[in-house]
Length: 257
Image (spheres, one colour):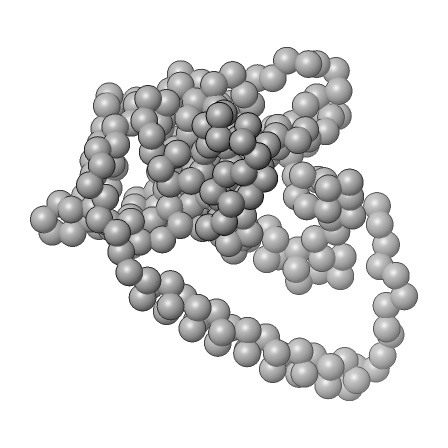
């Protein structure tokens, strides 16, 4: 375990002075976050005219069907494709979202996770992790491709794909993200927002809590991000590491569940 190097030790009065200075900076950040949230809500919308059909435990459903009577739909692009294991970062996010479901559903927001993996594979992963969120398959759909969370192999091979609003060299066919949709009284669906990379980091309340502690996130390598320490919640006691695709690989077994 790492230690905190050379902390400043001061009197209570000195601590209060320093804390008040930091509080002023925290308030400025909160105000800026409020302005950013308002700008996010003010983004223009794009009408979704293309028909997207998903495999779900209750049968085939269209994008418009996923709202479940609510006007807002929050979709998690979950990194899981045919034959792969769950992504540690996506599972970390799902653990946080699970506790928010009841509150989202009572505030006009439906949450759905979407992956390219076949539905049977998704259902097995959901049972393993004991998640309650609706998690469905876009296996036969262009949905993840059109919303730039997945990339066709031939595009990856060209050396650059469009992710997080720029062409980037990414050697993976799936990455993480969130997309938000609105359905109006006429039943028309609009794309209002998407976030990728660290753009949705505030979903991770564990990070927000760690940021309050002396060691902070304490991600000291080898990757200097959450893959240094985050594991699927049923794998923390298992020895292993996270590979380049974000999957946990146990030391004593090559097979992935």
